[in-house]
Length: 162
Image (cartoon, rainbow, N blue to C red):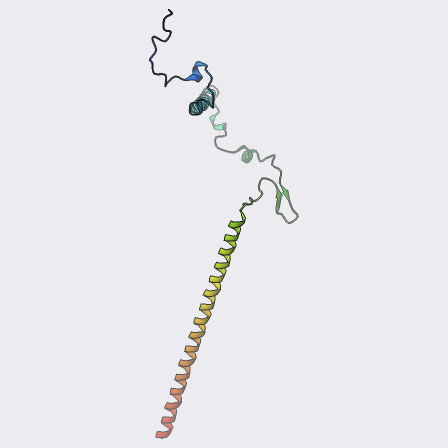
């Protein structure tokens, strides 16, 4: 019988990286493992990019000329985006087009009902204000009338005394 080829390796196989060993992984058979492997590969790829960039900077310099975090369209001022405008300046087609929110019929009806309710409330508030204003005006008129009547009485009393 042949000897065990894995005699010197630990029995725990959870830390084996199949991507390093050259073994493929089937997505349907082990989706979590495949996803973790993909994330690991992306991390390595990013790390290698950074290392390569750092080596280039160390070797040739020019870090001040790099475009870190700035969009090239802002720097160079050119884009390939096509925008079509109407004569009055509204956008018909293009990247700056306003987004249209699609809603179902029930949501539209709810919004319309809400707007109607708000309008009714505003009208009621205005009506209450008008009524209060009328009451205040009537009260002022009544007070003024009472003052005038009191003046007339006072004048009549003065006339009677004289």
